[in-house]
Image 1 (tube, rainbow, N blue to C red):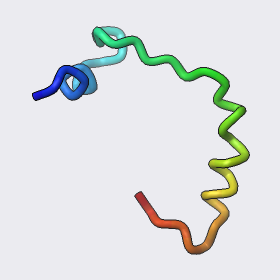
Image 2 (cartoon, helix red, strand yellow; image 1 turned 45 degrees about the vertical axis):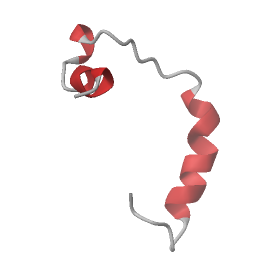
Image 3 (cartoon, helix red, strand yellow; image 1 turned 90 degrees about the vertical axis):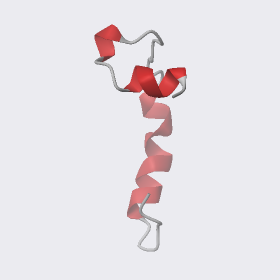
Length: 43
């Protein structure tokens, strides 16, 4: 199994790869537009 998949199974504080969300407000308008679409594909 790949390194990232093994890391994703660990709690955040035990992961080797640090994941940080930067500028979440920047993506909010695009996400909101997608969630408001009646014909969006549910991933």
